[in-house]
Image (tube, rainbow, N blue to C red; front, top):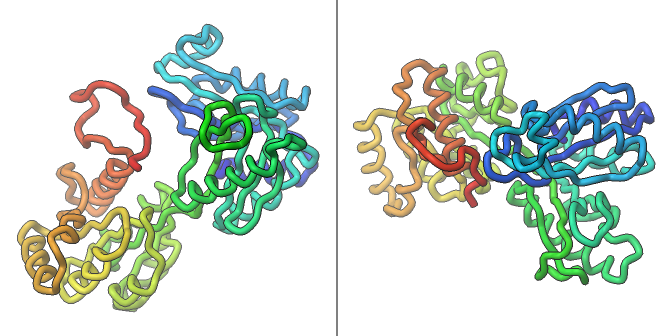
Length: 373
């Protein structure tokens, strides 16, 4: 929904009820992940995508039917489904898609959700997508509050809502979107009720240290991949907004001091591009003791060996040093700043999805993967 938020927020503000289709399950080589969304307004305008083109036509018609009927539905499209195959889902994947009418009467919490997403505040939308519950029943969960209900009037309503609140907040903290299952009485054990939790966590952070031409390219590709990008350098003449227009923040500070005072979590990526010992050794001392999910440093193999010796002398253990990805990036033969940025981005993607980094023509099995836990 994040990708179509601007359009659907305007439709909602105009008082329109539109159809919102969201991928709530993706299996095998499905082209779009859970959370991908497409919306259809009453006039027939379409924004977003749920399948990269494979089943958009069928979902478009279903969205219009749902708006007319007012009833949400979950529809499965897959290679074994004759209708889906006829409209083009020939990739061998399976998609479960929730299609629901969205307007002031059906989704009164939408303005608060849209405001949180726009402000980069964490919020999760939990919807019933299978089992004995009412399809499309919804609860919106923030870190400190919640609204709506997944089982209005049911004996286990409070218990189910509380369980989903706890689980959704855990998923939100990790930036995970997916389906949870509960027993008929709202217990976490059981497989009766399926609840899809769409997490709108703030974008993962990419911290780029070293205000050089390579950093500008890395900031650009990092922003393209959806990161909140910060460029930091101690030299004010180089760390300027003009030189890094794609960065969300440009900070003038000693890198190690800035990193020690900023928030870092498992979704944070750190790219150290200074390849100057007076900057990168103190910085990496701090970085390798944070929970950052990715820590890479630029430099030749000789620079890397010298860097490791300095870090060992500073007291870092082998287990900490093993987290360092240096030289940074995948082996693409990159030379230019832009090519190097692509190699770093490729390593970030490979780490997230657990890919091999080899050409697909040399591999077998599934192409699309589940995120690495």
